[in-house]
Image 1 (tube, rainbow, N blue to C red):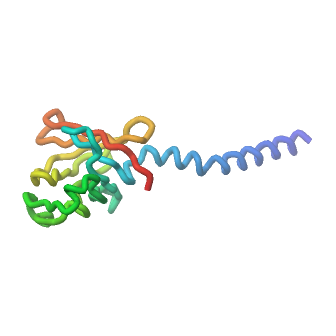
Image 2 (cartoon, helix red, strand yellow):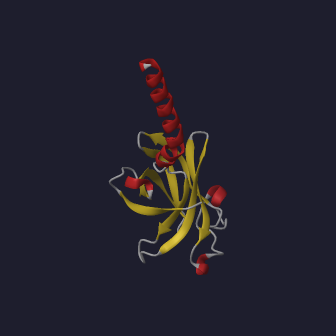
Image 3 (spheres, rainbow, N blue to C red):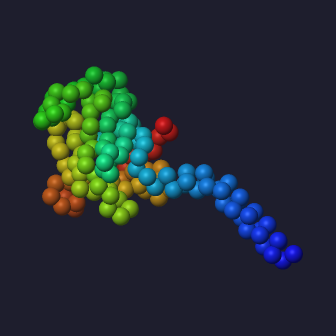
Length: 154
């Protein structure tokens, strides 16, 4: 009898854990930088663009999915070099080659499409998973600035 009750409890616990699997997986996903993020303009503090971050070959890449101010909808990266020279900002890959480094991603680059500057980049997801801290810098991280992006559905 005791053995049967133990087994029923054990199986019930497994069923409960299985039922919690999807919500727990969703919570774990909040720590992932993958997804759609809204950037905020440093000067105006207004939403600027949506950037989609994806993973390829173990590294992160970010592409401008849309520009939120219609004035900039047709803007091109006129000061960009290499394969991004003259390309439309919408669809432009602005984050490249970020590699996992503990709770953050590091070792890649971020492009400022306004002036074509490329900076070293480091990112990490903020507490609760609703923000992404994006740091661009030259040389050492202390010689740069950070932006906080907001997670968007989709």
